[in-house]
Image (cartoon, rainbow, N blue to C red; front, side, top):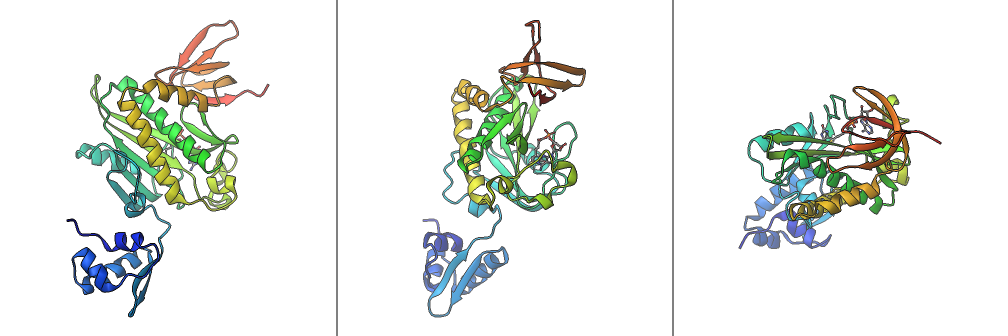
Length: 323
Ligand code: BT5
Protein backbone atom coordinates (compact mmCIF):
# COMPACT_ATOMS: atom_id res chain seq x y z
CA UNK A 1 0.00 0.00 0.00
CA UNK A 2 1.19 3.48 -0.79
CA UNK A 3 2.37 5.34 2.28
CA UNK A 4 0.68 8.65 3.00
CA UNK A 5 2.33 12.07 3.18
CA UNK A 6 2.54 14.18 6.34
CA UNK A 7 0.42 16.88 4.74
CA UNK A 8 -2.23 14.42 3.64
CA UNK A 9 -2.59 12.91 7.11
CA UNK A 10 -2.76 16.33 8.79
CA UNK A 11 -5.34 17.55 6.28
CA UNK A 12 -7.46 14.44 6.65
CA UNK A 13 -7.56 15.01 10.41
CA UNK A 14 -8.77 18.58 9.88
CA UNK A 15 -7.01 20.53 12.58
CA UNK A 16 -6.80 17.72 15.15
CA UNK A 17 -3.53 16.73 16.76
CA UNK A 18 -1.82 13.69 15.26
CA UNK A 19 1.04 12.15 17.24
CA UNK A 20 4.52 11.95 15.77
CA UNK A 21 4.38 8.22 16.22
CA UNK A 22 1.17 7.87 14.24
CA UNK A 23 2.49 10.13 11.48
CA UNK A 24 5.69 8.10 11.29
CA UNK A 25 3.67 4.90 10.98
CA UNK A 26 1.30 6.31 8.36
CA UNK A 27 4.13 7.72 6.26
CA UNK A 28 6.52 4.82 6.75
CA UNK A 29 9.41 6.99 7.96
CA UNK A 30 11.13 7.82 11.26
CA UNK A 31 9.86 10.44 13.72
CA UNK A 32 12.95 12.52 12.96
CA UNK A 33 11.98 12.50 9.30
CA UNK A 34 8.48 13.68 10.24
CA UNK A 35 9.97 16.59 12.19
CA UNK A 36 12.07 17.51 9.17
CA UNK A 37 9.05 17.36 6.85
CA UNK A 38 6.97 19.50 9.24
CA UNK A 39 9.69 22.13 9.12
CA UNK A 40 9.76 22.04 5.33
CA UNK A 41 5.99 22.57 5.28
CA UNK A 42 6.33 25.48 7.70
CA UNK A 43 8.91 27.06 5.41
CA UNK A 44 6.45 26.67 2.53
CA UNK A 45 3.95 28.71 4.58
CA UNK A 46 1.89 26.04 6.36
CA UNK A 47 1.11 26.86 9.98
CA UNK A 48 1.62 23.69 12.00
CA UNK A 49 1.44 23.57 15.77
CA UNK A 50 3.81 21.13 17.47
CA UNK A 51 3.24 19.83 21.00
CA UNK A 52 5.59 17.35 22.63
CA UNK A 53 2.65 15.63 24.30
CA UNK A 54 0.00 15.72 21.55
CA UNK A 55 1.94 15.78 18.29
CA UNK A 56 1.21 18.02 15.32
CA UNK A 57 -1.81 19.81 13.98
CA UNK A 58 -2.44 21.87 10.88
CA UNK A 59 -3.64 25.38 11.68
CA UNK A 60 -3.67 27.02 8.27
CA UNK A 61 -2.54 26.59 4.71
CA UNK A 62 -0.69 29.35 2.84
CA UNK A 63 -2.49 31.58 0.36
CA UNK A 64 -0.56 30.07 -2.53
CA UNK A 65 -1.69 27.98 -5.48
CA UNK A 66 0.44 25.04 -4.35
CA UNK A 67 -0.06 21.74 -6.21
CA UNK A 68 -0.92 19.97 -2.94
CA UNK A 69 -3.74 22.44 -2.32
CA UNK A 70 -5.08 22.57 -5.86
CA UNK A 71 -4.97 18.81 -6.25
CA UNK A 72 -6.58 18.07 -2.87
CA UNK A 73 -9.71 16.02 -3.73
CA UNK A 74 -9.80 17.73 -7.12
CA UNK A 75 -12.77 16.47 -9.09
CA UNK A 76 -11.16 16.31 -12.51
CA UNK A 77 -10.29 13.45 -14.88
CA UNK A 78 -7.65 15.13 -17.02
CA UNK A 79 -7.14 18.81 -16.23
CA UNK A 80 -4.64 19.32 -13.43
CA UNK A 81 -3.48 15.69 -13.31
CA UNK A 82 -0.06 17.24 -13.02
CA UNK A 83 0.41 20.72 -11.58
CA UNK A 84 3.63 22.72 -11.75
CA UNK A 85 3.89 25.76 -9.47
CA UNK A 86 6.18 28.79 -9.58
CA UNK A 87 6.48 31.58 -7.06
CA UNK A 88 7.67 33.76 -9.90
CA UNK A 89 8.10 33.07 -13.59
CA UNK A 90 8.32 34.98 -16.88
CA UNK A 91 5.14 33.56 -18.39
CA UNK A 92 3.26 30.37 -17.53
CA UNK A 93 2.43 30.00 -21.24
CA UNK A 94 6.13 29.83 -22.05
CA UNK A 95 6.71 27.22 -19.32
CA UNK A 96 3.72 25.20 -20.49
CA UNK A 97 4.96 25.35 -24.07
CA UNK A 98 8.35 23.97 -23.16
CA UNK A 99 6.76 21.25 -21.03
CA UNK A 100 4.50 20.39 -23.99
CA UNK A 101 7.43 20.17 -26.36
CA UNK A 102 9.07 17.85 -23.82
CA UNK A 103 6.01 15.58 -23.99
CA UNK A 104 3.93 16.79 -21.00
CA UNK A 105 0.68 14.88 -20.71
CA UNK A 106 -2.77 16.17 -21.61
CA UNK A 107 -4.12 18.35 -18.79
CA UNK A 108 -0.78 19.47 -17.34
CA UNK A 109 -1.25 22.76 -15.51
CA UNK A 110 1.32 25.47 -14.81
CA UNK A 111 0.52 28.13 -12.21
CA UNK A 112 2.45 31.08 -10.88
CA UNK A 113 2.00 33.57 -8.04
CA UNK A 114 3.70 36.31 -10.08
CA UNK A 115 4.57 36.62 -13.77
CA UNK A 116 7.32 39.04 -14.69
CA UNK A 117 6.65 38.77 -18.44
CA UNK A 118 2.93 37.91 -18.63
CA UNK A 119 1.71 38.00 -22.23
CA UNK A 120 -1.49 39.01 -23.96
CA UNK A 121 -2.29 38.62 -27.65
CA UNK A 122 -0.42 40.32 -30.48
CA UNK A 123 2.66 41.04 -28.41
CA UNK A 124 0.74 42.87 -25.71
CA UNK A 125 1.64 42.47 -22.06
CA UNK A 126 -0.41 41.03 -19.22
CA UNK A 127 -0.07 42.64 -15.79
CA UNK A 128 0.42 39.74 -13.35
CA UNK A 129 1.16 40.77 -9.75
CA UNK A 130 0.60 38.70 -6.60
CA UNK A 131 -3.05 37.85 -5.96
CA UNK A 132 -4.11 36.62 -9.37
CA UNK A 133 -4.59 33.22 -10.94
CA UNK A 134 -2.01 32.94 -13.71
CA UNK A 135 -2.60 29.52 -15.19
CA UNK A 136 -1.62 27.70 -18.39
CA UNK A 137 -2.87 24.30 -19.48
CA UNK A 138 -1.29 21.87 -21.91
CA UNK A 139 -4.12 20.20 -23.82
CA UNK A 140 -3.79 17.50 -26.45
CA UNK A 141 -7.18 17.05 -28.09
CA UNK A 142 -7.27 15.13 -31.37
CA UNK A 143 -8.56 17.94 -33.56
CA UNK A 144 -7.73 20.01 -36.63
CA UNK A 145 -6.32 23.50 -35.97
CA UNK A 146 -9.58 24.96 -37.29
CA UNK A 147 -11.35 23.57 -34.23
CA UNK A 148 -8.93 25.16 -31.78
CA UNK A 149 -11.17 28.21 -31.15
CA UNK A 150 -13.64 25.89 -29.41
CA UNK A 151 -11.02 25.13 -26.80
CA UNK A 152 -10.64 28.84 -26.14
CA UNK A 153 -14.42 29.08 -25.96
CA UNK A 154 -14.72 26.33 -23.41
CA UNK A 155 -12.03 27.98 -21.32
CA UNK A 156 -13.86 31.32 -21.48
CA UNK A 157 -17.18 29.75 -20.48
CA UNK A 158 -15.47 28.00 -17.58
CA UNK A 159 -14.03 31.30 -16.32
CA UNK A 160 -17.49 32.89 -16.59
CA UNK A 161 -19.13 30.05 -14.65
CA UNK A 162 -16.44 30.13 -11.94
CA UNK A 163 -16.82 33.90 -11.51
CA UNK A 164 -20.61 33.68 -11.47
CA UNK A 165 -20.30 31.08 -8.70
CA UNK A 166 -18.76 33.77 -6.48
CA UNK A 167 -21.60 36.12 -7.37
CA UNK A 168 -20.10 38.17 -10.17
CA UNK A 169 -22.10 39.04 -13.31
CA UNK A 170 -19.31 37.90 -15.62
CA UNK A 171 -19.75 38.00 -19.40
CA UNK A 172 -17.61 37.36 -22.45
CA UNK A 173 -16.59 40.22 -24.69
CA UNK A 174 -15.59 38.96 -28.12
CA UNK A 175 -13.10 37.55 -28.82
CA UNK A 176 -11.64 36.51 -25.47
CA UNK A 177 -12.16 39.04 -22.70
CA UNK A 178 -14.04 38.21 -19.55
CA UNK A 179 -15.67 41.35 -18.23
CA UNK A 180 -17.66 42.31 -15.15
CA UNK A 181 -19.78 45.46 -15.42
CA UNK A 182 -17.85 46.41 -18.55
CA UNK A 183 -14.37 46.02 -17.06
CA UNK A 184 -11.89 43.29 -17.89
CA UNK A 185 -11.37 40.81 -15.08
CA UNK A 186 -9.76 37.96 -17.03
CA UNK A 187 -8.11 37.23 -20.37
CA UNK A 188 -7.26 34.11 -22.32
CA UNK A 189 -4.33 33.46 -24.63
CA UNK A 190 -4.47 30.24 -26.64
CA UNK A 191 -1.46 29.08 -28.61
CA UNK A 192 -1.65 26.15 -31.01
CA UNK A 193 1.19 23.92 -32.18
CA UNK A 194 0.96 21.20 -34.80
CA UNK A 195 0.63 20.36 -38.48
CA UNK A 196 -1.88 21.94 -40.88
CA UNK A 197 -4.22 18.94 -40.46
CA UNK A 198 -3.75 18.06 -36.83
CA UNK A 199 -3.03 19.78 -33.57
CA UNK A 200 -0.13 18.44 -31.53
CA UNK A 201 -0.99 20.47 -28.46
CA UNK A 202 -2.54 23.72 -27.33
CA UNK A 203 -1.46 25.94 -24.50
CA UNK A 204 -4.42 27.72 -22.96
CA UNK A 205 -3.29 30.61 -20.77
CA UNK A 206 -5.83 32.08 -18.40
CA UNK A 207 -5.27 35.16 -16.30
CA UNK A 208 -7.84 36.09 -13.64
CA UNK A 209 -7.52 39.20 -11.48
CA UNK A 210 -8.58 37.87 -8.09
CA UNK A 211 -7.24 39.73 -5.05
CA UNK A 212 -5.82 42.74 -6.81
CA UNK A 213 -6.49 46.10 -5.21
CA UNK A 214 -7.09 49.42 -6.89
CA UNK A 215 -3.70 50.75 -5.82
CA UNK A 216 -1.97 47.67 -7.30
CA UNK A 217 -3.16 48.40 -10.85
CA UNK A 218 -1.01 50.58 -13.08
CA UNK A 219 -2.73 53.83 -14.04
CA UNK A 220 -3.40 52.86 -17.64
CA UNK A 221 -5.46 49.86 -16.52
CA UNK A 222 -7.51 51.53 -13.79
CA UNK A 223 -10.36 52.50 -16.09
CA UNK A 224 -10.54 49.29 -18.11
CA UNK A 225 -9.64 46.56 -15.60
CA UNK A 226 -11.15 45.17 -12.42
CA UNK A 227 -10.66 42.27 -10.01
CA UNK A 228 -12.81 39.87 -8.03
CA UNK A 229 -11.69 41.66 -4.85
CA UNK A 230 -12.89 45.02 -6.19
CA UNK A 231 -16.20 43.63 -7.45
CA UNK A 232 -17.05 41.43 -4.45
CA UNK A 233 -15.71 43.93 -1.93
CA UNK A 234 -13.63 41.40 0.00
CA UNK A 235 -10.78 38.93 -0.37
CA UNK A 236 -11.74 35.90 -2.46
CA UNK A 237 -10.40 32.40 -1.76
CA UNK A 238 -8.01 32.00 -4.67
CA UNK A 239 -7.39 28.30 -4.08
CA UNK A 240 -11.11 27.41 -4.19
CA UNK A 241 -11.65 29.59 -7.24
CA UNK A 242 -8.72 27.98 -9.08
CA UNK A 243 -9.89 24.48 -8.17
CA UNK A 244 -13.41 25.26 -9.31
CA UNK A 245 -12.05 26.66 -12.56
CA UNK A 246 -10.01 23.50 -13.21
CA UNK A 247 -13.10 21.38 -12.58
CA UNK A 248 -15.26 23.46 -14.92
CA UNK A 249 -12.65 23.28 -17.67
CA UNK A 250 -12.27 19.55 -17.18
CA UNK A 251 -15.97 18.80 -17.55
CA UNK A 252 -16.24 20.88 -20.74
CA UNK A 253 -13.03 19.43 -22.15
CA UNK A 254 -14.43 15.95 -21.62
CA UNK A 255 -17.69 16.93 -23.29
CA UNK A 256 -15.72 18.37 -26.20
CA UNK A 257 -13.67 15.17 -26.60
CA UNK A 258 -16.90 13.16 -26.56
CA UNK A 259 -18.18 15.14 -29.53
CA UNK A 260 -20.42 17.62 -27.75
CA UNK A 261 -18.82 20.70 -29.33
CA UNK A 262 -22.24 22.21 -30.10
CA UNK A 263 -22.96 22.60 -26.39
CA UNK A 264 -19.72 24.55 -26.05
CA UNK A 265 -20.63 27.02 -28.78
CA UNK A 266 -24.15 27.37 -27.41
CA UNK A 267 -22.95 28.09 -23.88
CA UNK A 268 -20.31 30.53 -25.12
CA UNK A 269 -22.88 32.44 -27.20
CA UNK A 270 -25.25 32.77 -24.29
CA UNK A 271 -22.47 34.23 -22.10
CA UNK A 272 -21.26 36.63 -24.79
CA UNK A 273 -22.50 40.17 -24.28
CA UNK A 274 -21.23 41.38 -27.67
CA UNK A 275 -23.88 39.49 -29.66
CA UNK A 276 -26.95 41.61 -30.34
CA UNK A 277 -25.10 44.91 -29.85
CA UNK A 278 -24.24 47.61 -32.33
CA UNK A 279 -20.45 47.71 -32.38
CA UNK A 280 -17.45 49.39 -33.86
CA UNK A 281 -14.69 46.98 -34.89
CA UNK A 282 -11.07 47.94 -35.37
CA UNK A 283 -9.20 45.44 -37.50
CA UNK A 284 -5.75 45.42 -39.06
CA UNK A 285 -7.43 46.63 -42.26
CA UNK A 286 -9.40 49.53 -40.85
CA UNK A 287 -12.55 50.22 -38.86
CA UNK A 288 -16.10 49.02 -39.52
CA UNK A 289 -19.44 49.32 -37.79
CA UNK A 290 -22.40 47.05 -37.67
CA UNK A 291 -24.72 44.87 -35.65
CA UNK A 292 -22.95 41.90 -34.05
CA UNK A 293 -25.37 39.15 -35.02
CA UNK A 294 -23.43 36.02 -34.15
CA UNK A 295 -20.12 34.23 -33.65
CA UNK A 296 -19.46 31.24 -35.90
CA UNK A 297 -17.78 27.86 -35.33
CA UNK A 298 -14.36 29.37 -35.91
CA UNK A 299 -14.93 32.08 -33.35
CA UNK A 300 -15.33 34.78 -36.02
CA UNK A 301 -17.65 37.68 -35.30
CA UNK A 302 -20.45 38.15 -37.83
CA UNK A 303 -21.32 41.79 -38.42
CA UNK A 304 -24.40 42.93 -40.26
CA UNK A 305 -24.06 46.23 -42.11
CA UNK A 306 -26.87 48.78 -42.61
CA UNK A 307 -27.73 47.23 -45.98
CA UNK A 308 -28.19 43.82 -44.39
CA UNK A 309 -24.99 42.29 -45.79
CA UNK A 310 -23.01 40.11 -43.42
CA UNK A 311 -19.27 39.64 -43.01
CA UNK A 312 -17.21 37.47 -40.67
CA UNK A 313 -14.19 38.92 -38.84
CA UNK A 314 -11.56 36.64 -37.33
CA UNK A 315 -9.88 39.27 -35.19
CA UNK A 316 -10.18 42.84 -33.98
CA UNK A 317 -11.11 45.08 -31.08
CA UNK A 318 -14.77 45.79 -30.45
CA UNK A 319 -16.35 48.75 -28.78
CA UNK A 320 -20.04 48.78 -28.04
CA UNK A 321 -21.79 51.78 -29.56
CA UNK A 322 -24.13 53.28 -26.98
CA UNK A 323 -27.51 53.95 -28.59
C1 BT5 B 1 -5.42 38.73 -23.12
O1 BT5 B 1 -4.74 39.41 -24.07
O2 BT5 B 1 -6.42 39.11 -22.57
C2 BT5 B 1 -4.78 37.39 -22.73
C3 BT5 B 1 -4.21 37.42 -21.35
C4 BT5 B 1 -3.70 36.07 -20.94
C5 BT5 B 1 -2.95 36.11 -19.65
C6 BT5 B 1 -2.57 34.73 -19.17
S1 BT5 B 1 -1.95 34.73 -17.55
C7 BT5 B 1 -1.39 33.12 -17.70
C8 BT5 B 1 -0.83 32.99 -19.10
N1 BT5 B 1 0.55 33.38 -19.16
C9 BT5 B 1 0.74 34.46 -19.94
O3 BT5 B 1 1.86 34.99 -20.17
N2 BT5 B 1 -0.44 34.87 -20.44
C10 BT5 B 1 -1.52 34.02 -20.01
P1 BT5 B 1 -5.26 40.71 -24.80
O4 BT5 B 1 -6.67 40.52 -25.23
O5 BT5 B 1 -4.24 41.02 -25.80
O6 BT5 B 1 -5.27 41.81 -23.67
C11 BT5 B 1 -4.09 42.45 -23.27
C12 BT5 B 1 -4.46 43.86 -22.85
O7 BT5 B 1 -5.26 43.81 -21.66
C13 BT5 B 1 -3.26 44.72 -22.50
O8 BT5 B 1 -2.79 45.40 -23.64
C14 BT5 B 1 -3.82 45.67 -21.45
O9 BT5 B 1 -4.50 46.75 -22.06
C15 BT5 B 1 -4.88 44.83 -20.76
N3 BT5 B 1 -4.37 44.20 -19.54
C16 BT5 B 1 -3.09 43.83 -19.22
N4 BT5 B 1 -3.05 43.23 -18.03
C17 BT5 B 1 -4.32 43.22 -17.55
C18 BT5 B 1 -4.91 42.74 -16.37
N5 BT5 B 1 -4.23 42.09 -15.41
N6 BT5 B 1 -6.25 42.91 -16.24
C19 BT5 B 1 -6.99 43.50 -17.18
N7 BT5 B 1 -6.48 43.99 -18.31
C20 BT5 B 1 -5.16 43.84 -18.51
